[in-house]
Amino acid sequence: MSNQNLLIMAQYNIWATARLTQSLQLITSEDFHRDIGLFFNSIAGTLNHLLLGEHYLWFSRFKEGTSPTIALDTILHSDKNTLLNELNLKSQNWIDFIQQLDDERLKGQLTYRRVNGEQLTLPFAATLMHVFNHGTHHRGQITAALTMMGYPCPELDLVYMLAEQARTQS
Image (cartoon, rainbow, N blue to C red; front, side, top):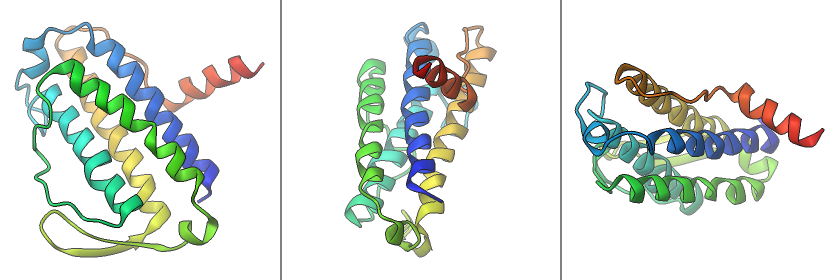
């Protein structure tokens, strides 16, 4: 897996987070916090999990080599705008980090401790790809919740971002 592939996924993460944020501006605070049966209960709970997982756990593991221990369902922000702003800001951090990775690091291993204390050693690049796949998974849950509640839902497929990029480069 190359830096270029990972950069595309980091760009997609930024793009999809921004598009989802636009759609979430339309929903009420009540619907944002309503327990609708998602794994992390609500849209707010799921977004807090994304922020925590991508930026407080995984980014620390990759960039700093640390393994924070914080519950995966921790609510970092209950305010919608604060939560969405931090998600959007922190998503930018992956670009600089990935640009600095060399082939040796990408082909290496990542050793970290899970929240439960178990130590794992996994392929570095594939585990980094997991971070972006994880975000896609949870954004999909949120878009399904938006649809279920009758709100408009953004198209978040990667090909839509690629098409936008192609149009701007033409």
